[in-house]
Amino acid sequence: MGTMSQQQFENFTASSLYCEKCKTAMPVRERLLLILPDRELYDYLCTGCGSSVGQREVTAGDKLMARAAAPPRRPRRSVAPRGLVP
Ligand SMILES: [Zn+2]
Image (cartoon, rainbow, N blue to C red; front, side, top):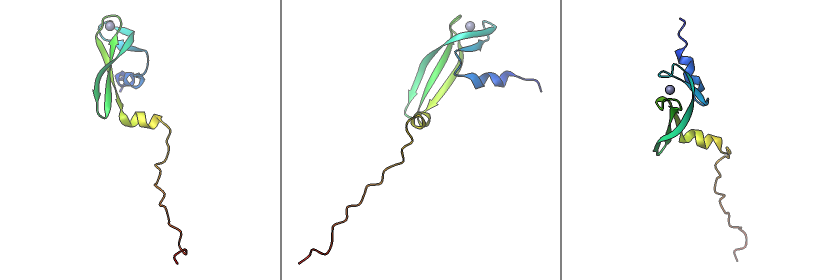
């Protein structure tokens, strides 16, 4: 009990992260590291020493969820009117 290190990973969207080299929380720079078909990887660099202090993964699902959650439309089947056959 008593390890607080895991809690640092909950604030990845924060503009400052703890840097091991600087021994303190430093403002970070977000850099696009890698683009994959279904996700993007971001790297967080310490603005003080330039070392990587964390990474974030944004999946395509997160992006789609951000958009309007419109239900998929079903193609309406066109029904030909009956009863007009001579
Ligand atoms: Zn640093």
